[in-house]
Length: 88
Image (tube, rainbow, N blue to C red):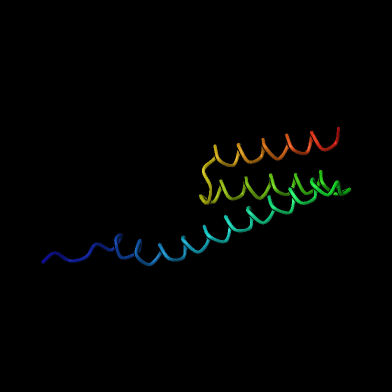
């Protein structure tokens, strides 16, 4: 029987840590989007700041591999569109 490769053993060690980081970044992005939507719907003063924070959280999630870049772009676009409609 062949020995286990060192790289495979390292990947086995890394996988749970990476999965946890992905869950955390995805969760924080979702929370930011929800709070931005709530701020937009309630016509709060900080709606623009909330949208910016959500866009930043989505970009960080993309950078860390939690969300696909097109999905993040779609979410940011829809948030901006919603914010624009509410300000008119």
